[in-house]
Image (cartoon, rainbow, N blue to C red; front, side, top):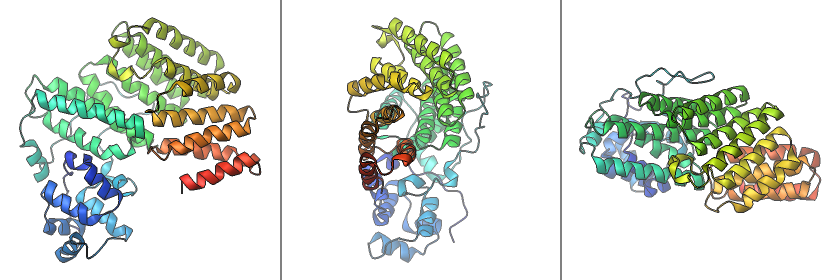
Amino acid sequence: MPDSQPHPALPPALLASPEWQDACRRRDFARIFQLVKLKAGIYPSRIAARCGMTPSRVGEIMTGRRTLAHIDVIERVADGLRIPGGMLGLAHRPWEVPSSAPEPATAPDPEPRSAVSAPGGGLDEVLTLADGRAGPSTVAGLRSAVEDYWRRDDEHGGTSLRPAVLGHLNYVTQMMRTADAALRPELHALAAELARLAGWAYFDARQYSTARLYFTQALTLSHGQEDHLFMANVLSCMSLQATYDGNPVDAVALACRAQDAARAVGDQPLVMSMLHMREAFGHAALRDASACHEAIGRSRDAYELARGREDEAPSWVRYFDETKLLVDAGIALARLGEAQQAEPLIAEGLRRETASRQRGRALHAFWLASAQLEQGKLADACDSAGFALDLTAVIDSPRVVGHIHEFHRRLTPYSREAPVIRFEQRMREVLR
């Protein structure tokens, strides 16, 4: 039996390393155990105790004489070594879900709360903190890592990044306890950004309840620093998730609350343009055509005010360029049911979009396919959905895969048509 003691997380640097991620993806437990020993200082006897094995069996696995195939044993290893389930192709493990943050019903509670959990005092955590006090170079390195996470999320989806992001979030919140007072605001801001990134990754994985927990943590951290712009940023994420989660009334309320937070800072036209479009999504889901068109108009007006001033906007909103404005307006109209007006906007946005934004292009191709199908353009719709399908080979986004399955269900009345047969064949090849 595995030992009953709570186990500390593996070092964030190990979880983020390509060698570790490759070994987990291949379920190469010989290499996994070797890396745990070398990089985390967990020796075979402790591996055995944690995972409910004998030391001799662990030794045989490490030398390649035995393998692990039974799912119950693999789950024991994941739980014993604190390997996030997604890295091994397992379901989300119970211990990955934070238990301290409350889940909001519509909008999060704005009252400040402690956003840092109590230290666990485990050996790995103590050794991590003993590496040295946080300095400016530490903060700079962490900021660079967060920027890289967002870039990789944009290109390939955030599912595979979650373990490393959560590791860094834990690392930063622990450092906040021992850092010099001058650095704590920067570490606080980093923790908020990592919590938002974790929430976004869980949203992209369609694990909405867990995403809300991390978004709430991010909101709490930014509220504690009175960072109104970042609060608007987090609320905009929560608004988009509410739209996806079938709560459009909440989506509109959260988008409007985000706008209020941004107005408290002053002149922020690019931020307001993005937030008005979030509001438009909610109105579209409610099928409120008048409110949706008004919100799209406000978004366009704000964007015109932002032209030539993009460098003044926060870095997190600069993705919202003219191309994104165009395609998001098309998506809002597609949600509203105005497919004929939506199609040219989404098509033009998709044509302009850079190749590096793989997940965005896949999502936009889905919405183009939806608008085309709504107009009876079956062949065009299947071609556009096929493009989204092909992009799933280079991204890891359950949100995109969910859209593809949704589109496939809408093809049921046309199951004998040649474009549908070809699409289904490609779907079997890609999503097998």
